[in-house]
Image (cartoon, rainbow, N blue to C red; front, side, top):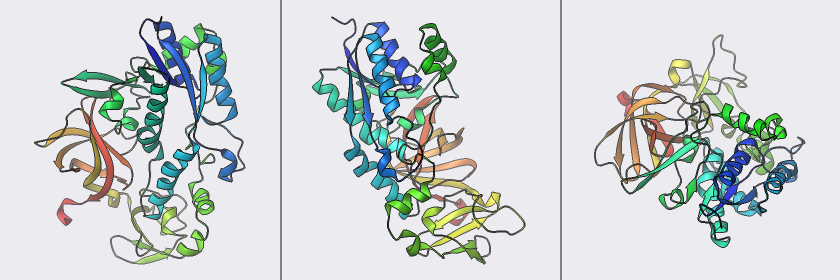
Length: 370
């Protein structure tokens, strides 16, 4: 009989999820490992060697860890549900002129739900992952907070998890630093994990070429969108033609093919006219934004405006902002200008280290132009 109950651990084959399973096993949980197959590289059209969480090598690494520690391991094929939801959303967002965040979407709408369904079938009280974040139960709410290792903190990617799912979730690495994880793996003789390189690519875009992926995914796209205008935001002057609005992102500077004698950046994407607006670096700055499809975490809702630090991308350090909830939309007023706010990306609101909630960026604004 296990000391703490049965837990289903999502194992990608990498060092973080492997150590999460190992630590729970050592703590006395009855561990069951599960590796999710989300994507088939052969169908991506990429010539790159299969790597990352869905590769055969990664699946074998996860299984070997389970065998070494003496607990069961299963492979869960969720390619169909992953493709129907995450990849279709990814493609659709670019076609709408937005910049998607498929990893956040996958966490909140695919992986957690898939794990919990299998956990129920296997009589597991909990699920666990190797994310660097923490969970606590306070005032009848489950709250995610930043992991101890600020350089590895992954709370930004977890804002969309429901309260019901959080009530059954464990993050064994939240109180640890990455260096400690490496030390633990060395001490226990798992040098293959220590020496294994980590992948930061989108699993279904293994070469990081999202343009090529879109072209393969949407036949005829190039011909349909090629030849749109590059326009200077400040003056309205047409300064060139581009390959099509879906192939650009807010804040992009490289690969524009426009030479004006000074650096320019994509400041806005206009899908309906196939126009891409350009400007200098200060032109990227916005005073605020609206965020929709909220998932509130620390508080069920905000009755009054709240001072937060708000992040608009994963590697963003965050900017102080006053957030005001308007139904299922949040108005965010930054205390200073923020560059590169991209509709379609996730915005996450923090109070100290706690995740207040998050949502998807709808649009940004200048206060004096509203």
